[in-house]
Length: 415
Image 1: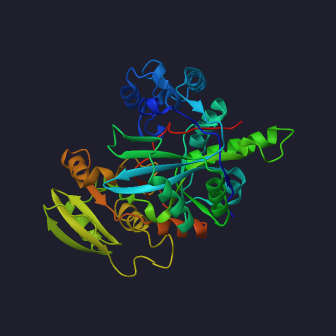
Image 2: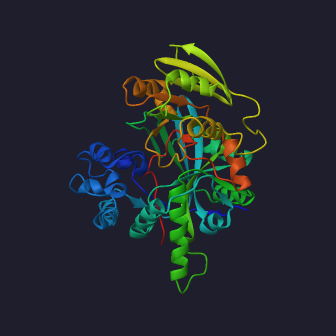
Image 3: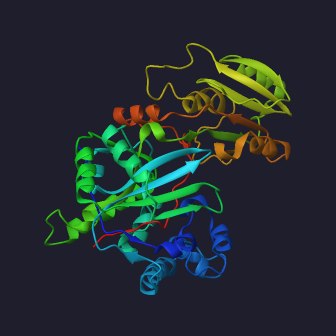
């Protein structure tokens, strides 16, 4: 069963939150962060992308950059831009996109739950990315940014959250980049804190939705600290890491689409003919076509859109992986026809989050940068949970969650 605890969050006073908050470290590059931070010395980018405090071109992995992160984290606390709460409590974080609101509980998840599989993952992680985030956690002795979890729907928690949602939030702002609304409440009532803890204790599993590398790094640093502490007793703050947990049914997963540079030596006609072996191919002309059901794909080639529907027998609906459209397209189009074997390393393919829409796919092909675009029907949260429960791993580049969590609303210190 899942073990969580409240924590004394470190967060910006209300008047500073919009200056401090930022996008997550991994959705923008160094120059974008430098531009967004501008002359705002309170921007969290000085902690999560501290290479912006050095000359352009400085590696984000330079040892000086990690040291600068810790220096800036200390400075933010000394200046009063980040202040620690006096009491251990939970928090509610709501995001509104396209008139739909999802409500997350900000908690401290248990390191051992990650190590023992109570917290379930569906993606592989890369050791180099883990180590980067581990260095960041170590040098700051804190989880500066949360990870993103899902939990099975729970009526008790839903009722509690909705009660708080009727009150005035601590923070309430429209983010400048994504244009989405972000709200934040503090759960300080002891009975409500106990109720949250108790309801999570009934859950057999939590699921990582987004942030696999941050989850791994946070848990591994916690385990590392436990081994290094001669007086370790299991109650220390480093045994926990910060997560925002959303009810699974509330989450929005967008399509994660593909653009490919060439046809692997085929002409357009030969490529379309090759597709007909495993797909029903329908020419949609110049009108944009978006996949409208599972196992249906959209192809853009030579200024025209096509509907591709996988034929019976080309997939296995009883297999948590085999049912996925990312698996079908990877096997039968990218690998079999285009010769793209490894989505993580092949330079002939790139990926476009669904928030950018079909217009972005069309633009990249029409510009000549790419030869074709392939749009997929989005993965569901149930599919993700089924895969995690089965112990299997999703194919790469399968999920795109929106809206992204804003960073800087609350931070968890490890001691």
